[in-house]
Image (cartoon, rainbow, N blue to C red; front, side):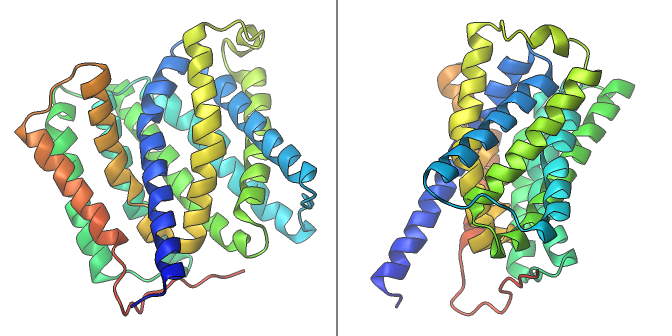
Length: 314
């Protein structure tokens, strides 16, 4: 039987994971509302750069060194560009051409598979039967929940390109998340989040102002109340809260367990639609949500003896 301190730490991690799922499950609504008015590049670039700047200032005021070892800069810049500018632009513009249902299928089904696959490719984790079972159940649940509605109608060229954008953006985020894990052997999670957010946000802002249609006009920040409320929500609980939790859990749990958030966030999105938009859930929806929650529970359950522990490399 584990010690009370170990049990408390485990319960705390699960609580943080639940908060992460709740916040990121509501992100779609905020992103849709914000980018409907403001170009996605400047909307996201401003959010990430401000989030990184605030975290860096907070660390400096606490007396925490914010200097990054020179040997890490190349890897940090690469991770930052993959995680924020590449992921955000491709993903958000892809979403403009496909339904939210199809986007949810692609994002939710691909994330845990990509996370575990990249972790195995980079030598951080080993694929186990439990992971395979959790992935199979979770993907089945996503397809049951969203598949029938996403499959309605034929896909035109723009929809196919949009779907490819969502897939590529998701792969960029998953790879950069896994690649960032060894960096936390040197930098604390909050410090790494601050640096990657700031670098990625600034790069995205520069690219947006230089190339994105409508970005210069939106730079006057005369946005509607809805756009600003969406931006603040994405900044505070999402960027300054859930992202730090995500990095901490990536360090402590590894990609396989953390990646199961993608099975839970669609359930949160559906429940939000029920309570906010008065949407209804039928029996098929209920089965899909139950399968995804079961998959997350299977992957999050840690056996007494697990030979597939994470292998961190510098």
